[in-house]
Amino acid sequence: MRLKLLSPGEMNESQRQTYDESIAGKRGKPPAPMMAWLNSPEMARHATRLGEVLRFDTIFPAKLSEIAILVTARHWTAHYEWYAHKRLALAGGLNPDIIDAIRDRRTPDFDDPQGQMIYDVAKSLHEGHGVEKGLYDAAVKLLGERGVVEVIGLCGYYTLVSMTLNTFEFGLPDGEVSELA
Image (cartoon, rainbow, N blue to C red; front, side):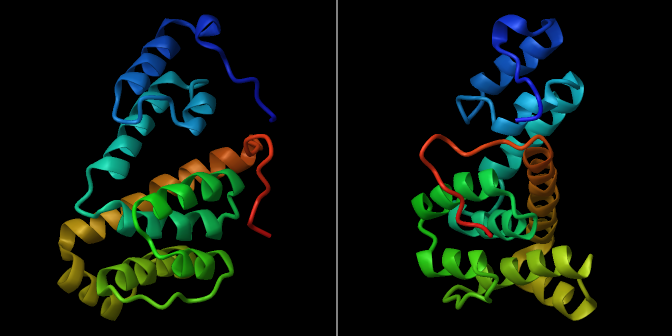
């Protein structure tokens, strides 16, 4: 870890307010990257709020939103993010074969057209730096404009998370080994 993470007793008032707000939220605990973001308390406050919306309040069930998150974690080879969201994807009902394919950088076989579309849009955003017209039109038709906006939000927010975790070298919990090479 490149950064000393503050305990609640070491936080200034602004940091403590953001920390307390995160505990009171739907997660019940502060998300790992927020502990680094607390060095910029206002950024931490807004990023944590955005993360809560994207994690719990999109139009997608967890098994679909986790596809975009796992594609992002894999793109950035974000070990901690992969570890945390693989568990959430499995708990949300995502097929383990899809998770393994994303991990191995293979195109998964989807039985759900929405899952396939979320994967395609997320891959296009990360690898192509955008979404070409044909894919965009198909995504809007299948996911709706709100769905497309939320997939972009998931990929963008979890890019910030992945960059934070990678830059500050967040480690995995004791006894855990990364699946990503």
